[in-house]
Length: 114
Length: 113
Image (cartoon, rainbow over all chains, first blue to last red; front, side):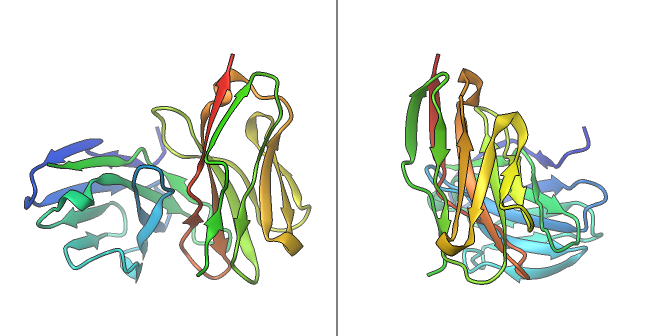
């Protein structure tokens, strides 16, 4: 399968714990995006990378959230000191570097904070 | 505030009925437009897209969408739905020069056999 992959698919954690998610984009895609989706809502943009550079961050991305893409390939999203409000589906997407910005999504990581 | 609006969040219809889902956006200027579909238990998949040219675009599985610039709309249609079209449908807008997609809240469509 050459699509976007995410790991883990599900994560249950206790409030206050740190969690880290991984995303592997489509191999030839230079752009990588993180979105968050809560029940009854569409995905909301969190952050975006062009190769290894993090070029844009949403105000939704509080200082407890950090994302990296160290070698311009896979990316990690870490949430420190998780809160119940962080419970959501975290989606990763990737795209080519062009004007069309057609994004391909992974299956997501569902986070439940108890 | 700039936004993407999808109304009638829950739609229930019978097989062979026609489906139309509305999408309106408030971004000015040139935009790229998308409809994504999420089948039960699956991830978001691209249904169709509009970048430029013919405002009537055809996607997979018999879906089509029409871009009406004057109305800031990109409505999705299918003349005759099937049970397998049961899914959640999301409209997404990418303002030209911006790298993020802005999504609507989605339409949960249930097709009764």
